[in-house]
Image 1 (tube, rainbow, N blue to C red):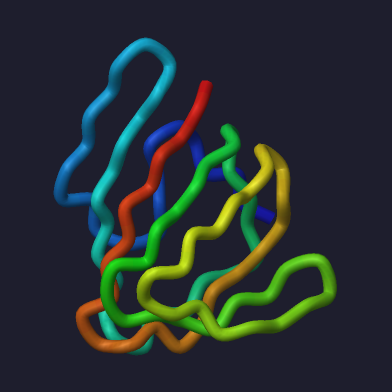
Image 2 (image 1 turned 135 degrees about the vertical axis):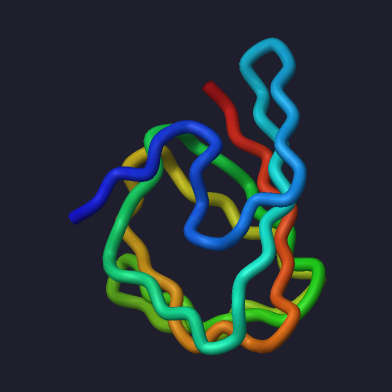
Length: 95
């Protein structure tokens, strides 16, 4: 299982800003992208702006849609599949 380090997300990061222990990233995801199981080094919130995906974590599977705000703990295992066209998130990560 892969650990993603600070400021690293599976899509393409377009904007990356750090300030006093907070990292803000705008990330886009290509249509059809699917990730393997992974977790992140730091806790973070993600706000889905466009598109979406199917997510699995903690034995649950749900659809991630625009305007949803999701929280991930620092070692929470998850994966996202079937990204829709023009998927875009803003991530706010905490050291």
